[in-house]
Image 1 (spheres, rainbow, N blue to C red):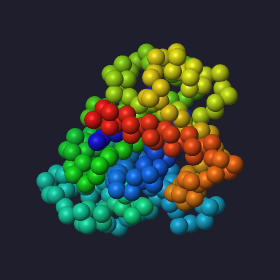
Image 2: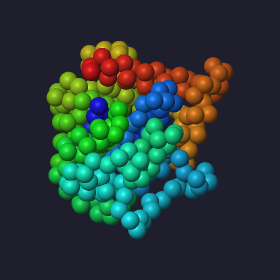
Image 3: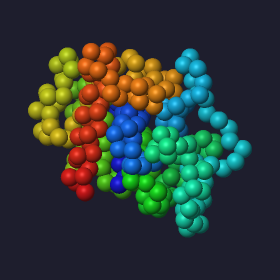
Image 4: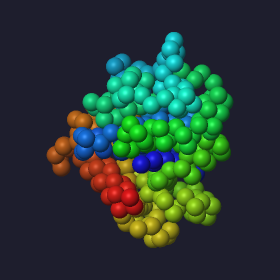
Amino acid sequence: MKVAFWSNVRGKSCVTSNLACISVLSALRCPGRRTIVFENHQNIINLGNTYFSPYSDNTVNESTNYSVITGLEKIFQFVEQGELLPEDRFFRYTKDFLGKQLLYLSSESIHNADILEYRMSKECCRTLDYLEKYSDMIFIDTSAAPLASSRKILQEADIVVVNLVQNPSMLSHFFRNYSDIRKKAFYIIGNYEEERTLNKHAIMQEYGIMENRIGTVLHNSGFADALSNGQLIPFLSKNYCCNPDDEHYPFIATAKETEQLFYDHIWKKG
């Protein structure tokens, strides 16, 4: 199953944080489910260094200059050569978390963003088909920039997780211009604040979204700090079963509900 996480808004829609949150919660709830994640673009803060960093909470896990080809670059080579790897060898080219339930394919060994876009655009379809042989789910952090690879990923995806923001202009822009994406969309409102006038129920009513196709990831300072410090997996693991009187309970309960809604939508669609 190929799932593109995407937004029509750059920088404010929490695409990376929502994807990271849902992927970790999925692994915690269903230990037998394997998910491969990657980006079709490069950022200083990427998925790999939100999940877990061995460094202190006060440092940002910086990109590493690899001396060997790894991650997406290596996968592109195998796709071009038509070489199918044994699982144990495939794992060598990933950063794996939670007992190989969550596999991240880094693009850090591709040092030029234009080269990454060229390779991704050229090999998008074959790469997604290739990766499906190794996992139940593929999550792609898809750039909002008008990239050819983003268009192809959105076309190929079985589900598009549209990451919404509580802003009337940005919401209107999406619902006026992306009818094709709406046909296979599940919606997540990130950094969500229930007390805003434009809350989930107002958005559902305004744009005709069914209740089982939209979830939220609440604004939460602990979650934000965990992402910034490369401690997302420890944070979610520690708080996954927290009590109702815990400060993080509203965030965890709502995020778990969103993850469940998302997978219910997938299985219903499939």
